[in-house]
Image (cartoon, rainbow, N blue to C red):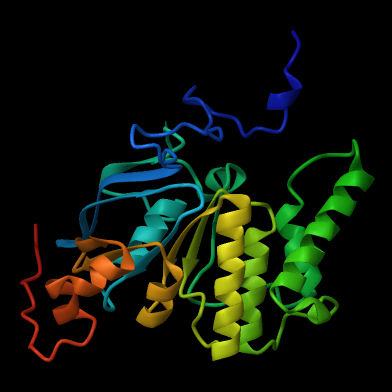
Length: 287
């Protein structure tokens, strides 16, 4: 029995469900079909609901911001989307394939990457090696030299785009926060992800570093069609960078729209964007 070469490196699928594949399909309105969809995501911690019926869609080339106060459920939603936590309700689709029960490794091998609030660099590897490791799982002994050359070229371009190419031979341990954040972004982008989840990527960065970060993220979305979802407490940064913004409040979607629409929403202005009116806190929902 022969095996198709195109499936040789694909992870096994005991359920028999098809693996997600890139799609250029358009919706009836002419916009690209969503690469990632979440439907009715619900997460409970004991009797408290951290997320309740949260839905969102990400399209190729889109930069979507996820904002809300501490405890709104932003990181919990990231954990669910990346496979670290299974939801108590709802589904996640990647190119139409249900990945709700897929592992983080499976999702990563099918085009999803994520950064974390806390730095996750390998201290004993150089900056360049961080990016090479992220691409190492692809390929085998065949064409090894060609693949290695392509990996190094990709790493070099990303480090230059991020303004940290001079740090390539430097060990990651002890890097300043802003530089370390940029290395994490470059590493997450090294394997050409189709979906990129960035958890507070601008935390600890200076204004020039934030500007560079925004330029790199725009380039990934515009040139490579990467769908980006980012959590960030710097609301001005989110509004300037993102094409769409989702606002979470106590685990539910409070508002969604363009930055201008979200700015104009009275509930959002009251809760997060500087209204002088006191905010009424709804009671915590318990089972």
